[in-house]
Amino acid sequence: MPTPTKPVSVIKLEGKSHRTNKELKQREHAEKSLLTGEILKESKEVRENELANKEFKRIKKLLNAIGKDDDLYGCTINRYCLLLAECTEFQSKREKMYEQLCDMEESKESFADNDDLATYYKLQNSMQKNLISLDRQVQAKRKMLLDMEKENIMTIASSLRSIPKKQENKKNAMLEALGR
Image: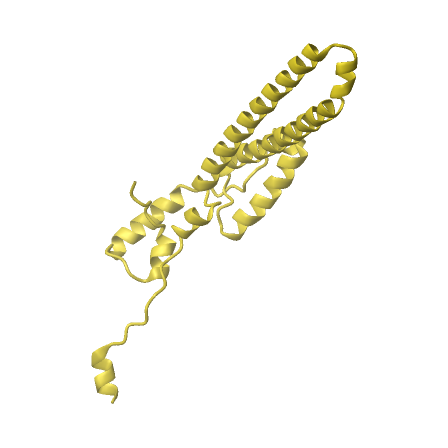
């Protein structure tokens, strides 16, 4: 998969490009036309969810620092915040389920006293299936989050693709010869 095209600001920072000034101006104009100029807005669902609200404010602050807090990305950022909150909720449900399973294993003797060991094993099997189901749901949400992070420069690799390469100070041999 080819690397995405660098934005004009990155090309200008690098100071080198095979593109003409006319192409760069046209491209810069096209990039600016893709932004709405409206500030990133929080959806009602995110506002009502405490975890999502907190994450939205954090991300909005970070996006503002790099000049990418346009409302064009609002749906994606709101969805990301809601998914993160849901993922956290599923993890806490899973932890509670695991604690209940451990408690049930500790109280196994009470089932043995009542000659109801079959019921114990059915309950244990059911709880383990629920744990596995919750794990699958958490993993699916984490995968969605990672995909969104990659798209929105929230991972190290994706942000490195947007950073200009360091300029090497090339010494001009002719100027050095004249300067001596």
